[in-house]
Every structure is written in structure tokens, then in C-alpha cells.
Image (cartoon, rainbow, N blue to C red; front, side):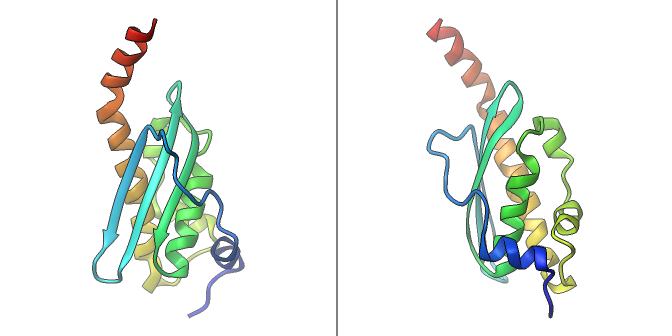
Length: 133
């Protein structure tokens, strides 16, 4: 099994590792079969994802896809980010071996989980902003 140079680069030097303390949305996903666990944090301002970070426990492909998904969503609207597919993540990494495509699925699911969390909290945030005025 060979990984692309881009996968290896994101594995060796992952971008956006860590967590956002005051995240607007947090996604938690895991695959019990392979043991990969991902947490993805997003910060949203005016419906645009201004920051994204991750913590991943897993193989090199899991780390690389987590890193890439955070890079791809920064600067996108929430609606644009919702259209990001696992195939787009894999393509941005120069491809993944078929046996590792589940890692790109986890990255997509983590993003969608974080956005879902954000959308659930959104009415509360609007109310909070009104109270502060």
C-alpha cells in the first residue's frame, strides 16, 4: 500500500491540530472496526467557518484526512462546507488506497457532525447576542 506525497505530508506535518476552546461546533466520530477516532472543532462567524481544528487517534490516513478537511473548510460558508464529500477530501490528498477510503468518510462525518452541533446551538447563540446588547 502506497500513499501519495500529499498524504505523507499531511501525516508528517498535520495542519490545525488541537482544539478550539470556545468552538461553535464539535464533531465526534469513530470507527470501532479500525479504531480511528476523530474530533473536529469549528469556529463560525457570519455563517463562514473562520477556523477548524482536529484531534485524531488513528492511522496515517486518518490524520491526513483530518488535516485536509480542516484546510478545505476554512473560509467556506456552512452550506458550502456541508457539500464537501469524502471523495473531495481524498482527491485533495492525491488519492487514498481503497482500503483507507473509510478514513475520508470519517473526516466527512466529523465535519458534518460539527456543523450539525453548530446548527443545534445556533438559536441559543442568536439569543445570547441579543442579551449582550
